[in-house]
Image (cartoon, rainbow, N blue to C red):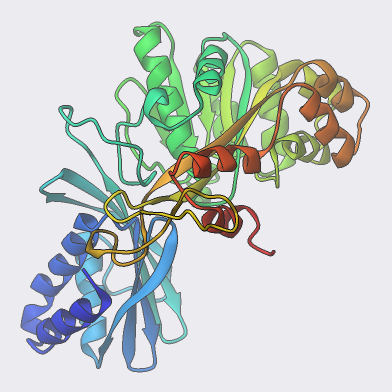
Length: 407
């Protein structure tokens, strides 16, 4: 679906008026899902609505619909998602389930009141059938990711799996929004379910629950009712779980309760926002966790990003590349002229052992922690990216875009 063809089709359907809104919304949602979009944005403007989508991590404009029909479109999405159509002054969240040729699509809908009208974001989660074996692509486009299919380096995949078999401890992930952390955590949970054979109670605390996994009990936060991360975690510990996945550790109380849970015989999986894997340990220190506790319970930290993969249909050999990359992005109809199709995972696992543990106990600063991490083999994501570029999977331009966004 090109931008020009989208606008032409949008204009045609828009001209059908309010009676054509159900078909228009169905075309929007189905088309984005078929094209592998992870998000569809409907942004209110003065007397119009701007449609944008995110593919392979990049947001771009699709087209514009003008006039009062924009309100009907938003209302139709709210009806499908089971939201209150008469409330336009509060944020609302809902879900839609649809189907494409690839299978069932789960859509998470978020409606937000803005100055010029309601802003709508639809996130797509494509479920694959059991008979499919998807190649690593967009992290949100595939439901049945496993550790083997994530794209981890073999040694890291083996170590990651080994940490998941431990009876207790903490395995933490870091990376910006949209870097595939939830997908990796769900792959880890699926691995635990497969190997536990029903002998471990596995529970998640999320905001919101994105997918339902067989063999896992999912909990969604309800902040209005007082069920935040600390409250949910404290209550859950009385349920005798063995494995707990916490969507995010972002405050001192959650960090303290999670660490105590790991110390008393639970395996904790979670995410912490930090610039790099070693700095997750500093972040826990800043949240008030004692160094000896961090050194005792944190088993490993994985840092990750997603980079766009070169489109296999049009990637072109580049013998004259100034940076030595063997291929460049050309662009074709398969990749909407971007030169990229799908995404590759860059991940680096940092075990908390040896000099890293010593640095935490001594409350070393960021530079010293980085040096200690290097002593146990941690190299950072740029080195992983160079390996992917040398293999013809991505480009240095894409690595710079993702890993050095301010450069």
